[in-house]
Image 1 (cartoon, rainbow, N blue to C red):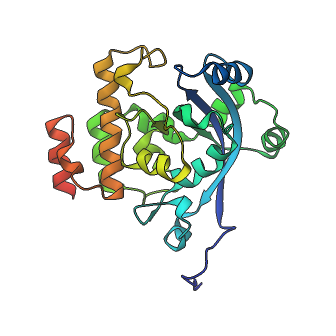
Image 2: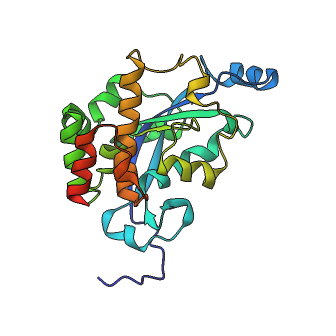
Length: 247
């Protein structure tokens, strides 16, 4: 089959269900606080929806800027372009973090999703991609080694491995990818740096572990999208050495 590289091949798509968690800045004006009280619970919105992204054989033909990062088609950006526009306009400047968990759907689950009905946690766990069971059990070194060697070439869902589908929008936590998301979609301009917050929404782990994990994902993201100087930004010396080895 021959492809016309000047045509965008819409319709050649993967489809997945996604569990979405949106976390918002807590230091907000009174009117925004009232809106958050109406549509959030403890500063978060949690829901499910269906998202689509191009299959591997069509990704090199995509030229839509809302799906591209540094000239490269990004499954993640394509997916976020289907999530961010649905956020209330007044809340977009205060978007702190997006967390996603992907799962396969069935006709029955699709019907519930299209109706806006919440899915049972058991249904989501049963349909979660095997990638979560395998990749997330690897050590940081093993994840880095695997991600650098394979990038996004070995299967349809390897983009999940690199970022673990967690996107941080505090100014001092943004990476090459999230900076592009902020610029493209005009979000998070009123989010405070992480050093100025109480860290109330962070996982129950030592702050040093949190920053290490964020920096680790930033290395993989910058490496994939060709960020200048990313090889010198590793938090651990061996990460930098491995990046140089595979560059």
